[in-house]
Amino acid sequence: MDLELVSYTLCPYVQRVVITLQHRQVPFRMTFIDLDDPPEWFLEDSPFGKVPILKVDGTTVLFESAVINEFVDEVAPGPRMLPDAPLARAVNRAWTALGSSCLGDHGDLQSAKDTRAFKRARESLIDKLERLEAAFGAGPYFNGASLALVDTAFAPLFMRLAILQAIEPIFDSAELPKTAAWSRVLLGLPLVRDSVVPEFRDLYLADLRKRRGYLASRLAP
Image 1 (spheres, rainbow, N blue to C red):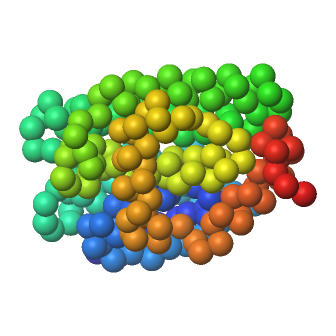
Image 2: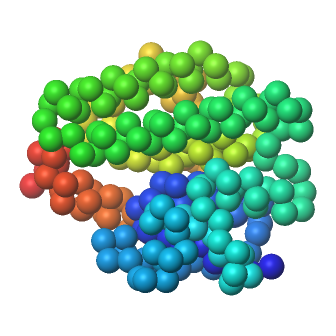
């Protein structure tokens, strides 16, 4: 099976899929595009005009990171990253959806033009992280000892928040100790660190500057 993952360097949803592919040891190749000037074939293949899309054997196109991740998990040999029990699977899918909503808040943090907008986005994110904190178990991963798809859903968020924390505090680790510990575990994994391009941090900061928002004003000249 030939898998081509179409990507944009800063997309957290692409990163989710890369982590899953690497963890499940599924061979794939990556094609990067410029979302500001996407090629015509991409607009034809992607119903929403968004990445990621996964081309399977050059013909079938999958879109939406959660759908792609479940496909990868189903076709790869070895232990699954979704629980076997239907209720546990549903719980994981629900929290994966919350992870997507958290990434929406992260996008609002990036785009906030002033302190008020930034605080509003941060409050929305913290509210969700507090709910996550209350639901999180003993760790180290969401389901316990094994990496799951819900972990891959949150790892890109934690990577970006770790960069932002050095610019403007987002949340207090002492108030969300389980979430903070989970973040440290995920960001310590080589497969998470290697799921982005080597220059990711520089590109991320350059993107913040380009947005000319509140966070850009907090960056050193």
